[in-house]
Length: 492
Image (cartoon, rainbow, N blue to C red):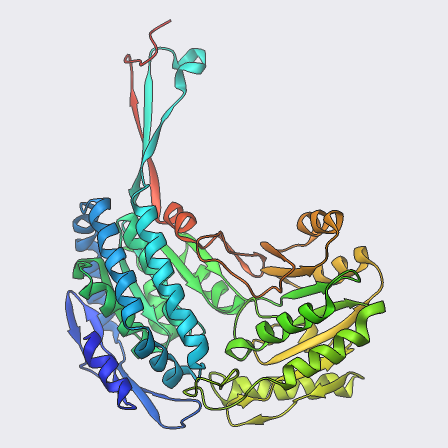
């Protein structure tokens, strides 16, 4: 399957994506088409799941859970290590597929596939570390004479609902960690990236993952909702918008949830910062993947004494970005996921201008390609300050005192990640303590992530933490063994 998908992508598509149900790849059924946002032609097709497919997947997942749980952690790790190598071997073809389906520049796509390889390798390492502990029950009088142990057992069936903006790496996180934990996983792929999702699953299967360990469906939100409500599912990992995350939680009921939702990331540039470096980093990370990242730089607050200098440098850096064909290795900014997403950038920048902001660059679009947009001095009530743009737009605003700018950052209903440029240790510690976010990047923008480091947000940015180690904790349950009357330490 992997070879067929990548060969079709190399020829320019359309690529036939497939479902994986009960150990069998299938392209049968009604087809949904993905129109490439840059090419404006059909780039992939996928079989749309119906009620019968969902029912089949539920039954197979229930039956397969014990099969996968019996697979030794060392065997799971070996598969994941082979998958890591396979991702590296196929990185050029996979990056091309990302460009076709999503308009993501191949430069960004290559980086994403490198992260896929890293993520699988980290999942393998974590699989080898799964174990338990001996509990200190004899340290209290009632536990004297007893011994207790724990180990982490697979949760059973995991559901992974993946987003379009990083469909390969976020699938690697969810599926890789779930398999490392010993679960069978149902994957509901994003409609915008069916071929990429098929390729990643196929890569794992061809690396030796048992077909019982994964099932893949393509479909809309109704398919996702039905899977979320399925009693066979023990844990759900979802990445997407805050509104859809709330819908997932409602449908899921009393299940374990890991929700990585939206963001409205702020970066603070203090007066002692290297302004040239801060401007360069914010420009590069504010428009990578056309700003379609939950931690993409959206709001930049600059100390008033350095504000105009930063604006000049930042605008020049943004103006130097190459916008165009995502298949061109020299392109920095490709297309957004669709025309509606690009229009949101245009509409919100125009709205801010009507409210007194200055649009220094961009503000328009060419089809689904939003021109990199810089908006200075938007009012606090502007949509691009309050809500998640998720596009090629950065707002820049001045601030006067550090406590005040921290308060401004915290007014957002989102709290995923923030950036801070300063050499002042006291400010760093204050920001780490006071900013209502899951992570703080110092002397870097908000848009930075290491895949083996905990990642997640607070407030409307979700809960739970992604990284293989943290996700394995969510994908497993602690089981306790109590030996009454048997003690490693004696009875008295």
